[in-house]
Image (cartoon, rainbow, N blue to C red):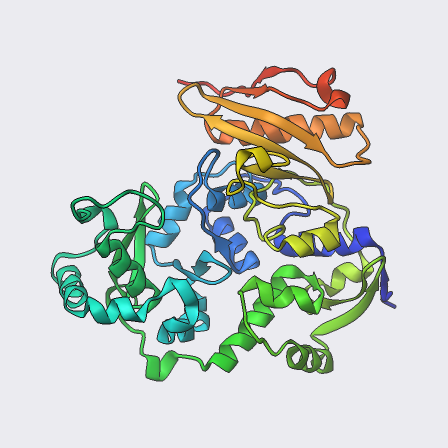
Length: 407
């Protein structure tokens, strides 16, 4: 008999298992593990900040441990992944292309990501750009000069960058690879030559149902209000989806300590009866799907978190790019880190533990090991701790070697 009453810890274990963060991989990662991990999460969010390893690489490291980052680039180049707007800009398994195609066919619904007036105004130039790509092959924004007097800046895009991004949102161009993390665009017909909208496209209604199913599976356990955020769905028919899945036995309602009624996806039913203890410790990206929905992180993990890199420094509570610390089933802390690549040093500018965190030798060992592995994977020879909470200051060294060899 499966109990319908779950402890908060049990609920957390279900979501961690669904996200691939319950227990560490017990062997060296293989290329297929990378693809399996992305499929398990459904989406791998992209962000360009690189004070430490860029987010998509870090999200995978949190699950796979030491792996070659170029595997992700390889998967994209081999057309096993594609890029598009999902939660935000994401790497997505290529088999899920039909789920997002309806957005490409109605790009005006994407808001700022597509500007029909710009497309109309620059129709001739854009037609010429498409012809250029057709004849000469893939391009980057960097291949085109900015107009004289154009000021640099995130929102001060040069015309060709705007052309490329609008064509990307409309699905006319796809990202065939990244060079120095810059998008390289090619015609959709070259990347997916066999795709035919008349034969392969899904209706928006069917696509949304499948995205809700992906979201439920990737969360493992969820509140209805958490589902739509995963793919940024607007006016999603969540009540209808739940009613159907409950009737089919593919979703089960449970009562969770402090949270009330949640729902468990059928892929996690075995863990309702036989819970597995969380043993994994990992440094997480701010864009990890475990924490990207800040309200969910607060409700399920009691972790109040926001990214402060866009907050003026004087108003930051913590730091520029603060990374959550997952430890054995709980989010127990956060750290402000920077990879000093020339010096081969991981600089931990400050580390904070959550209130009430018990400092055991096991926690200290877990933290030291996680930081060492995190640093070594990025090529650091040393970890340098610059500010520790008083309760850790005398129990962790200020500097230690990662054991890596610069040669």
